[in-house]
Image 1 (cartoon, rainbow, N blue to C red):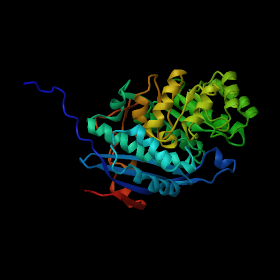
Image 2 (image 1 turned 60 degrees about the vertical axis):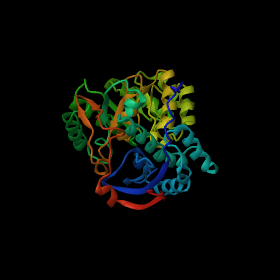
Image 3 (image 1 turned 45 degrees about the vertical axis):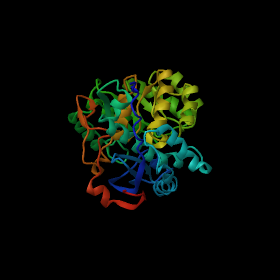
Image 4 (image 1 turned 180 degrees about the horizontal axis):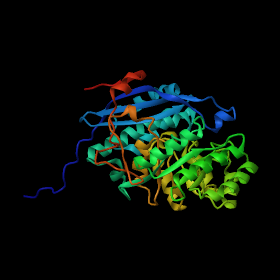
Length: 385
């Protein structure tokens, strides 16, 4: 008697419930960079976050988040609330198809910006769930190239802080185990930037990686002049010297300077980054997974960046980007901010200049009671059954 050796197909799981939360994280000190000093923006006092907590009929769970600074948080939440019902009843493993379904659910507002930032929280939750289901950290599910990533601190080097405080912050970061220091530049007086940078380089020494970030506030002549003046400091990179969308200007600057040029954090979709890549506008690309649509879109961009052998230094959200950077073929950097730490029970391990993957499955994060207390609005889509 013949019997089939083909195993029965497993029953597909289905997304049964999604909880969306709009959380407002207050910052202990108003934050200023060059955009504040030039009058483009007001100091930043809070970060708005969109959390998506997802569960399935078989009891699997995942969490993802996106964020907005100064404006956009309520808009992200509102858009996610409109499109998230499209996921109910779907197989959570079909992540690429579900990303497209979410985009088309809100197609009239486009495929970048606030729309894809809202989708990002849902997409990241799906990837977190998939990795948890496999019992693997997200980096391992994606195919990690390393178990730790070089990391540098940014949060201690903003322009609202006097230089003495910046120096103390730099020392504390290095003592904590971080591998590099980034400070903000782009003041109206370029000489003040040079003086500030000289003080930091003297404090940390020539052997410590040092980066600067002008936050798009230089024009082309200023960027070239100051970029040349900065060469003596042996910088790891100059970040956002020009407007984020000035691919031609960035390309000319990258060609003219020995110091690598980094940019990309403010772009809101893969297509916008392609313009930078095609123009050879940077040596180091700095995508932000929550801004470009989540893990699904980040992986597309990473493949393009790898093809051009670009260095990678994702922006902000280290809780997500540690995993994505660990899966990038070329040695990357991860940006350290402690701002989001009150939201999560877990802490990332930092030592010997690197941020280390834990063995926790998925992103390895769970929300604190404080995150719940800072929730301004929430809703549940689907049911617990």
